[in-house]
Length: 254
Image (cartoon, rainbow, N blue to C red; front, side):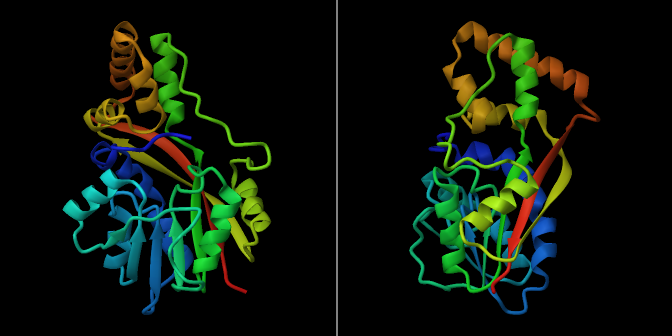
């Protein structure tokens, strides 16, 4: 698994905008708030929690990483985010009407136990997402151009792993005890700012940041040069149009 300690500011300046690309699909799945309460688990910098609140939901949020909470408090003080995370949440059974977890179950050591915990605290729907085409495809190209091995994260144990597709994600959730699960793939284009993207690397965000932190001086120089080359080739009007896909799964209460 990746280490997210201390990356809140760099994440908020870069990948937070990418991860928000699932919001329209999640919002469509849940419909109008109708006075319902919503818990955002793994809320990161609070961007989506604020979007849910702006849409009319009564929002609570939790995030276990201190630098993420600090950015959320600074930029979105209207969102109260407590220090908590999966697989054990400090909420009673059925504490809220809806639970959402955006790109969280792909970062935990026990996806099934964590999914069951989401179900426990919701008295209504659970909406969760995982990557089916993550940013790693872009950084693998940069690493290849630089002549360095791409980042390979720690693997889950065989009994915890699942297929990273809409069907595989839905089946994992069913295995965890969630009911009436449907899942579909959602795709979008992230028009990334190259400067913000590079900041994510230097800030240690995700696999590219972990890879860069391990490189020596010469490999870092080659990696940066390869990044600039790819940027020059792919940029459109100063931004990188990068394709991404996610599985968006919804579990309805019985």
